Length: 197
Image (tube, rainbow, N blue to C red):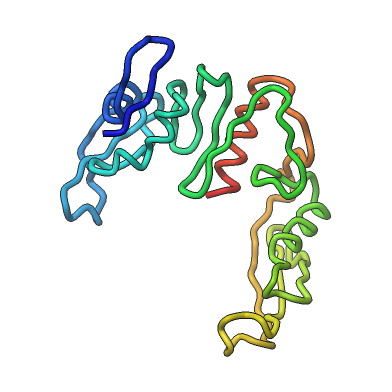
């Protein structure tokens, strides 16, 4: 069983003991739960943490000692004095002085032009060329591209495609900014969770 050190209290605790501290094990009524597994939900807000039998998947939460305001994807570590955001892809911590710059997972565009630029930058990769973004209506941006001759699926080579993205013209992010308070750091962790999910 994997171990981690709860330094403030001076004893060793395994992942299951960590989960007992921050989560409740409850029945899982999800229709796909054919095995009858229970689920761990946060004692803070009742959000999903992990399934019974998959406790080691959240070992990193125990290792970071994310014990306060633990939710599905965001929580605070008193040990590190940081707000953390995570998904199954990545985990990152934020505190006063943390920065948010273009290209970061937690970057939220500041206006419509910034949103268009951010979408093109994200999609214009090794397989997409002639990537463009344009506003279709008050809530939709259409991203268009052509697949180049390097895309592994040969049937896609030279063809074009598009993807529509919703946006809220009255609700943009902060763009590039620096966390000046712990509430700012919490917001960065929330934005990271949303961006990396």
